Length: 465
Image (cartoon, rainbow, N blue to C red):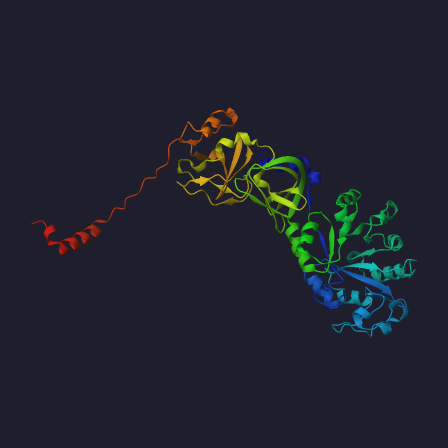
């Protein structure tokens, strides 16, 4: 079955497996790789770099003001060792970060971004082991409602009790449970959260966590120690997470754009690589990075899924291992095309032969074959009834060309051809070598006369008396 039929059948019959594979980019504390964390400058930069949400942390001051800060002790960000919970906000707001911005309250943050509807926030409630401060959630709900931010915030926390309280006070606002250990996840907690924010290590240890949580209707966000290596991103985007909390939102946005114009579907079938030349294995199909591995002609493979990115299909053949799907056949028996391996093709009766980017008529058209020119066959796909051939110009239908090269009918290849089933035996064969006629340039009468005059003036003896 050719690739076109694979796609049509899968889209029609396995529609439930088809999914858009974009993810939400969350700037961790804004854009801390550029500006001081959790400042207006850092948050603005994160949104400008493509973050849909900015993640911020909340502590409660002595006078019950929600303060935007990751640390309870402000020494690291301000140089002063004041503790948030032990000081009134009037005192805390006198402290300045490295860019000159003061420590701010959640009210001040919301005031600043009030008229920028595309700015959204993932807010973390910072709680003690004893769930203190007890009034934080009520103050948070009041602040959100006061600024009409219900549709522009999500809440996450390490505190299950805090999320349970938020589910009761503001049930329509999404809630994510932050976990670094599988032991913390249980059905009770999942009953009052919208999703989980997992450490990358948890997914690496058990990749089945993502589909399991999705099956329960829960979103999966991930966070890491944020070294943000290309290897980490390549691994992350192959795991269908719903969001990534990152210190590098610009990089996250780049990967999001690469992946958002893509779809995927399960395959779970044996295949075989039918490219005549080795093909590089890439870590992901969105922003391809070579793994250093190659797959060679007739290599047997197991295809887990196919991902379609901007009209081009890739087959996943292992963890962080993808190949162009056009050169992987799930149905074509190599024995039925082996007689054609060493042949070339030539346009049929000098007709225009259209080439395609992929082995199906719905893919982008490319430059046609040049008339009277031989092209080596670089790969195969499709089925024996509708075979596609890969050339330097692109993919072509076998029935549209002439196979070129069987001039020794005593050869082993021709013997194999004669023993193919009739249904697999193409008869559009060039039986004799092609010898293009050389065109003789005929000079004009005036040009000929000029040359005669030149010769007779140089050699008078040539003149006829």
